[in-house]
Length: 393
Ligand SMILES: *Cc1c(COP(=O)(O)O)cnc(C)c1O
Image 1 (cartoon, rainbow, N blue to C red):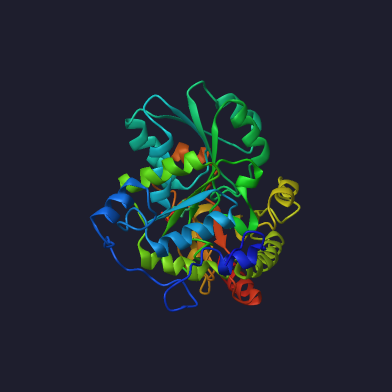
Image 2: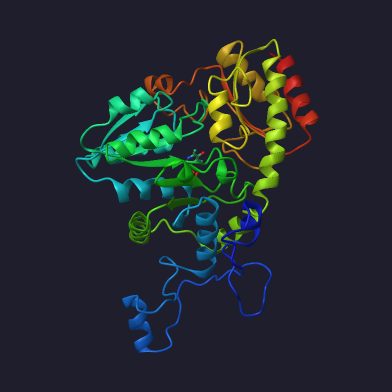
């Protein structure tokens, strides 16, 4: 159906649907690597682009197409390209938009591998990078050089939960002829729409909120401009981090409940953050839904709700953090986020342990920092679990 002028929740359910042979209510899985041509002329016309149709699944596939149309619609973009993983999207974005001699400015506290990829492989390919606190707009202005091509922002950041003003950041970038790419994984399009705020490209790890059920990995890039979209698609086709049709089917199924999942998880997160803020063994809580968060007002302006990710400091540092990890039973001790289940992790000893200590500190990750992804269990049970574990410290 045509979902052009329909609401977000209607788009979640119906956008990207296409007519299928038997009237199946859900998008069928076209689990095929290749598509037969009707004739030699038909094959030639498809390769020439004179006729629309499918050739080979790395290039395009109906199930994958359906997901791409849905995601482009949800982010108000021109087109989307999906990937085998979020990192497939990150590496393809870098490869498509940067070449030897170019420079990228990025938020310092981004997803660990996104930063490592730039500081190792892309550095070796001759791309320079500057990692800064993009929540400070003056730092963005100062970091931009004549050869800067891309401003890469994650907001809220991982795992320090600080926000960047996307509207202002895009104005600074565009003034210097720089494109703005935003990793919107922590918010999902339900909470934040970077393209509407001036960004040029949006990135997602579909593994998180969009699929939402911790059962597949996947990634996406969504572009506002047709030429940028074409460049991203071509790069995906050549580098080959393409999604599989079954994976696409899973994400189409998962994303349908995005609004109601995130709505409930945010309700829980607000209560969990308030509980932690009032707990004597907690040193500090970073959650944009608390008045104590320095960007409480910005969160209200740029996000529909403050999200479901909470970072907090346990009094007693590394040892206390580990004790907490070993004594929670409901929250799973795991990386990732944005699923229906609550997850807890301790970056200093887990996700960010591979970063150099200086890089960790410049990204604002202290030994006491714990990250909590609030799920949709009964909030009383989530709080009781944390309360019991905190008693062991
Ligand atoms: C998980 C994550 C990624 C990488 O995605 P994968 O699906 O794990 O490859 C990128 N950015 C952010 C913010 C993430 O949380």
